[in-house]
Image 1 (cartoon, helix red, strand yellow):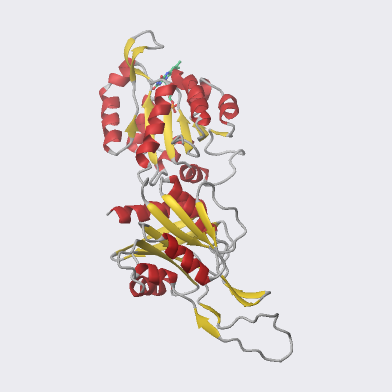
Image 2: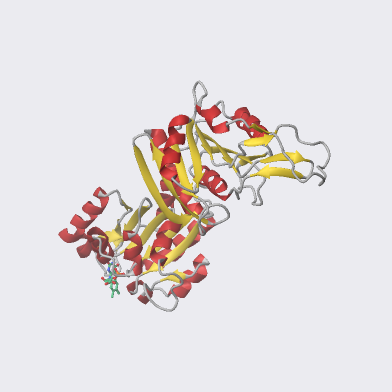
Length: 400
Ligand SMILES: Cc1cc2nc3c(=O)[nH]c(=O)nc-3n(C[C@H](O)[C@H](O)[C@H](O)COP(=O)(O)O)c2cc1C
């Protein structure tokens, strides 16, 4: 499979002659299955029209920081969050200088400044004199020192008539850089992750059951984020109304006992276990074989404890790196930390439920992640973004 398949690339285009080469770059990235969104500087629009890039990328092109076309007040943050990688090609001497000094006076540089853990690559393109200028050279050294990837420039004939260093590398070479970037970053080939998601259903009789509120969205997004990083994923899912993620082995179960069995059939060689499922703590001791009739004014049902899947995984002789979830309505920190210690987990992701706009059926969520000796808040974001941030955090600690 091409490493670029399904990748989200934000392409920044600044005002240089080489802007026309980005048309071919987009085509190449698209052909390999990547999705490209374009942010142009105002100067760049003097060289190639936004309409050209809209037509080639199939997505609206972003230029303005302010104005009627802006759909969201935090478009710059959303664009930075959306991307797996930001590539600026061509990168003018001016943009390189602005990135060096943290200047954010247009949409492209503001998006770059809003980056948190997304990587940035620049493909310098400029006249020989601009490239050789000590200011540019110092800026490039500074960006490189901060981990920003510098792809190029190449030597050769320049639009100004000179011959030397400063040409933007060709689209094919740039696409190869992007491809190898993802190949190197898919370092979780060989890592097996077992994830549980959704609720369980514990039958009371053939037509009724006890369950927990859970859409399964967070677990499904975490499964996709792990697969994105090249991990082998087994998703054990309770009944949900969302489609199984593509390319991920999904095992459908109903009860807590079935979930327990499916997890233990797959856990022996697993490296990481992430329990997001809302497993029912109790089940009916003896579910009725026939539908329970409405007769008596009061009805008691005897409940018995379900197996604690998370605790059982963490208690294995050689347990995987075990991550739990805690959905709490109050005193989140106390309950989450308690669960971390009691169940001997490596990490726990806590979220507050019962507030509108987050949790259960919402597409957004926020988490507070705790581990022994540390914690991190992952602020409100789409569940897809949050899943990627959480998986990055898990991988950081799993590797440590
Ligand atoms: C015809 C023309 C070609 C240019 N080519 C480049 C170039 O290749 N690289 C560069 O750094 N600047 C180039 N410039 C200068 C930039 O367009 C100028 O510095 C501009 O302010 C850059 O804005 P931006 O970085 O916001 O896109 C060129 C200017 C003109 C008029």
